[in-house]
Image (cartoon, rainbow, N blue to C red; front, side):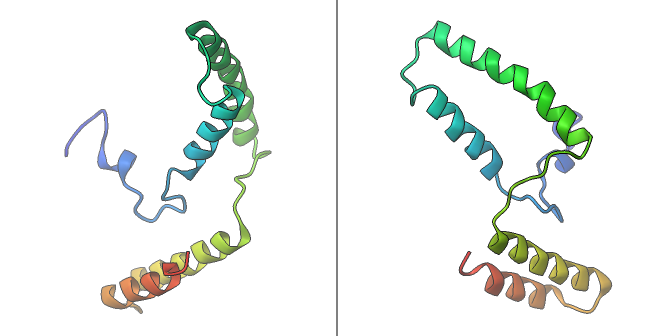
Amino acid sequence: MDSTTWPPSSWSVYLLPIRTNNDVEGWHYCLNNKAQHGRLNLYQLIHLLHDETSLVAVNVKLLSEGKAARLQRRYYAQLQQRVAKYWDEHAAGTRSAARLLSACSRACKHA
């Protein structure tokens, strides 16, 4: 598990607000729509990916300047706040590990 290439901090979602790959799935969905769901030849694919790379610099700049925000449905934002609260209580010692897991399980049951 000791690796300079992929240390645990790069693949662990411990205490991170984003714990899924839904953002990547959303990008992939949009890319598939642009690609007409995979009906591209190699040269069309290269052109599409080249166009996508031009957007990366713009997106990085917007994110670094705080001008872009992650879109999240209200329900999931509220769910994330509840889970973060439970973790904070656990870190403060006011919620046991068993109560933390139970509360998170109940909160995420219908998500």
